Amino acid sequence: MDLIDTFYDNRDTVGYILFIASILFLLYLFVNPANDLVIHIDEHYTLGLIQLPFENAWKLLVSDVHPPLYYLILMAGCGVLNVLHIPYDVVFVTKMLSLLPLILILIVAVTKIRRDYNILTMGIFTFAITTMSSCMIEFLTVRMYGWAMLFLLMAFIYYAEILKDSNRKSWILFTVFTVLCAYTHYYLLFSLAVLYVLYPIYLYFNKDMDLKENLKKWALSIVAAFILYLPWFFTFINQTLVTKDTYTTMKSVTIGTQINYFTFFILKQTSKLTDVIIFKILIAVFFILLVYLLFIHLLDFKKDESFFIFSGFAVYVLSILIGVLILTYTFRPLDIRYILPAIVVFWFAIAVLLGKVNTKLLLIIMVLAIVMFGTVGILMTNDNFNAHNKEASQEKNVLSQINNANSVVIYNSSFHYDCYHYTLNNTKEYTLKKLNLPYEEKTCTYENNLTKILEDNPDKDVYVWRLVNNEKDKQVPDGIVAEKVVNRGKNWLVKLDFDNNEEEQVTE
Image 1: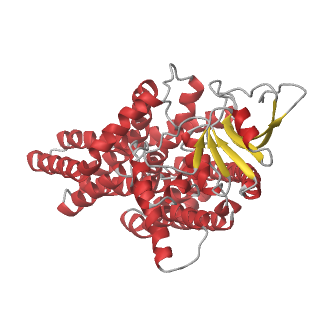
Image 2: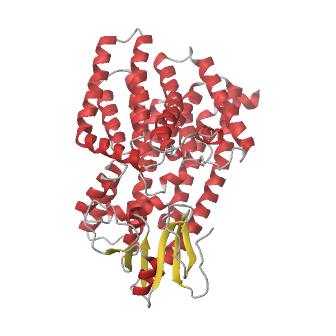
Image 3: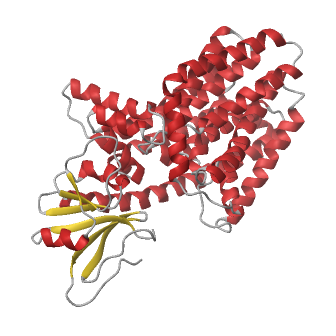
């Protein structure tokens, strides 16, 4: 008992230790080779877009499937450096701009969260989001997920203040961050909808608050958010319709996929249900204990605190369920990265819960579990980084070697062109399909005959980008040999040449 009491009495020290650990892991990101590498193919798309002339970039992002704010942040950052005539590496600068939200989250944690809640809450929250294997790589990926996590967290923080004291400042800030969320990633609309729907329920059960007056503020927030989003609203509708016609729907969601969604707040996505099955069982037990702690302490907390923690749990669970029901069966399979912002909100709610409980033994068990999960998460994240960095380094070396006038590069789709044109702009470029670009493009020649391309370029090395496992891709014609050079996932750069002896196909 003395040991348990000692731990409980030194909760602040534990919180500081966890916070320091999160800072150390942040510093690790600054020295990771991924700072200079493109570790995800979607990063190529981002880098290609922001290096276009602004008019063309705007046309492309309007025709994209994401809102514009993240791209504008990157273009603004690079634009400032251009105006100041400061030389820079575009990959490194965009990586740092994508890592910036994590730095801001840690600043918010050490100031506002520590002040409004307690040190243990601060430590648990920052340790979780910087060590769990599901989150960290996305902060060092040139995509919008880091900013989405920041904006949804800030909206949730001011949602908590609205529950406590429905003042004008909190409503304004909540509405502003709601709009920023909507301009950053569409999936955040599901999480925000959960918060907006829960608030009237809170008012119904909390008789101490003026129902009519607060419903008016709630309605004004919705109207204000819609007005601020109106400039992009019709583009959003158009993108939704285009996406529905473009992506192939998935007829069913496997049990393994569903478990991936619900364990993702701790564990990275796994390919099979039985992968690290013991770890998944421990996560399930951890989640059950969290629900138990919330249930037994509901009456101990203030009404706003209990409902706030409950709302954090609801955002995570309902964001997944809504995504599975709506996205999977109408547009495309739910990309597991989409729920990362909801995970940050969930961990904040967990941290607030654990920072308030007085069940000493259970609190120690939960904190030790989080430390264990975080340690495993660090090891998994490091393994992931090593794998990504190895693949990215090989691709970077190959692309730099072939980006010259002696090379021909053939794109099999507009996506491949968008991703790789910016880094292969010194080559002679062809496309097997007419590019579906929203701006005029004059550097790429349309030619769907591979044999003719080879015949027209006898003194050049000829390469083609293609999805090897996509059965809709063109097969290599008779008399052409294909050699895989480098890949980014299933996207392979394949070298082509004539073969006078036999037909060879691109195979795994």
